[in-house]
Length: 274
Image (tube, rainbow, N blue to C red; front, side):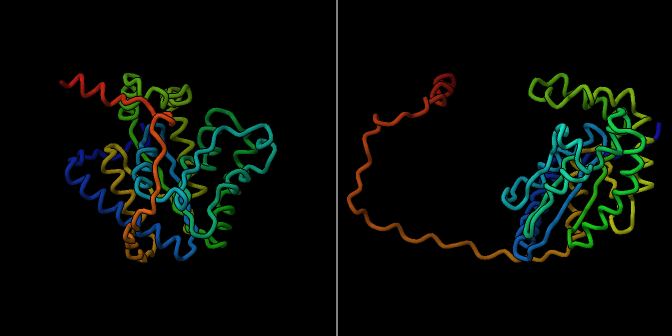
């Protein structure tokens, strides 16, 4: 099989959690620098289904301000959007000054799922491969910081993760018919990925491959790399001081029975415990 990541030992939980917290603290500093300097940062997450993109995005944004850092995960295009220039709906998601946008899949849908599943014509596909580098150069020339990550996972590990999702009612929603189809079309997706890299792995906007057999290792590696490629500095301000609470001026709270409270569901848990 092609596109097989290197074998990675599983990173132990304790060093993972310690380093993840350190990196997330640095991400907060990055966020504050982006906001203070008016930077526009775009991070593209692509890769195989179940390769760990969503988990990595979750760890990146966990402590960030959603008004500064937001996730763009676009649904299938509407009929109107199908009649637009292909990149148009992605342009609408680009950050303004002082914002970070993380694309949970991006315009590269055309080079992957649309190509493999026949959702675009050959002419649309080849036009995309020609226009994508031009589009990205335009973004970079306009001052946008663009980073692209490809999460790589083996066929065996992908199938194992699919089976885990099937067995977990809380995660079954993450497994779509399109995901299961990717098993039988593994090599088609491999060829599409290879062709995409040939045309879009350009010096101004290179692909950064994240080995994702071990999700913990992948998250740490991806975040550390992102931080290393952005020339941020610590611009965090000292936390504000809480003022002293003023003396009461005679305010009386209305009777509690005039308001509707949610039932104390937690009390049931206490009774069960006793």
